[in-house]
Length: 375
Image 1: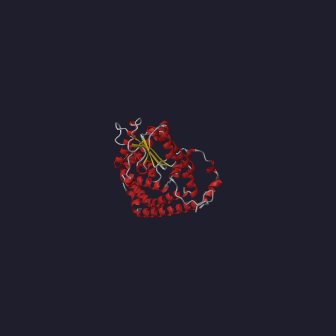
Image 2 (image 1 turned 30 degrees about the horizontal axis):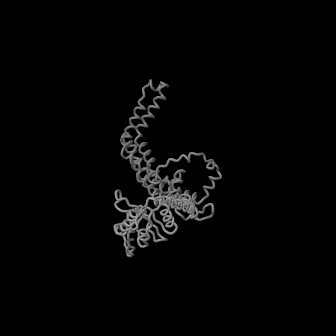
Image 3 (image 1 turned 90 degrees about the vertical axis):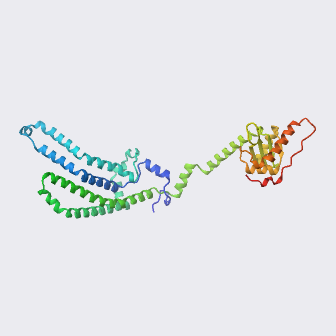
């Protein structure tokens, strides 16, 4: 099993970050056998489809190239231009095959690894020029595997090629007895058949090589558990830093919440463990909302701020507990608590209107079973 530089087993699958880094450095899975099979297959199909036209084009080039007048033969200045012209016409004749094979070479990588533009591979790496390093790569398990694969490929393709040529011996020998145009078309067709047969054998090799390359690529990028934990720590931050950020966020949210207490209409308490501050504006709100709530130390801070800002504090343990438990911050009071909250708010308003009077309003009695409600 491969081991990393720290001697730890690489048993973990590569993370997406590891795969992205490998891709940026130009390290992507590739199968040369798949690309070669695709190019040969497309070339064979192209010869079978467009071979007759290509053969006719070459026959025409041969006839025009050999039909020279005496003046053309003796004119030394025409030799080079004529050769360039014939070479250009030859390229035009084989352009369909060249275009198809080029397209196959460009698009075959999409099947495994995809296109990848990486400028890091352009950086000079002089260790590749070191013959000792090259010899080391040869005498490795992977190098031995590549050697065995090369010999197996040679034997398979060579055997199939020999079988094909022996089966076509009669046709090949008969080409000399055919007219020129027919012989050229027939030879191109035979060449296309040969490429298709070879492409089939190469496809067998590619079917074996592609899963092998993907497995080797994944194995090469495997990570140890320590590397995986380190990457998660770098990506998500250390637990200490995340805890510190979480505490800072909680402190900020608590300060914002406490700033809303002076705007509250009443603070309902447990009396010591819970505190819930309510605000209600009948012109803008459908129901009272919870602007602040807390337990223990936070509850004490809410009561302190309420006392400093003359916000009424109403002791109703069951109501305080159910509000703290069931109503989120800045959320409306549920309809199941309308009656109880309305009694408290009515009592607070009466206290304000009778502040200078000797008559005090009757304190409402909150149903103790209210804590059993759910919404």
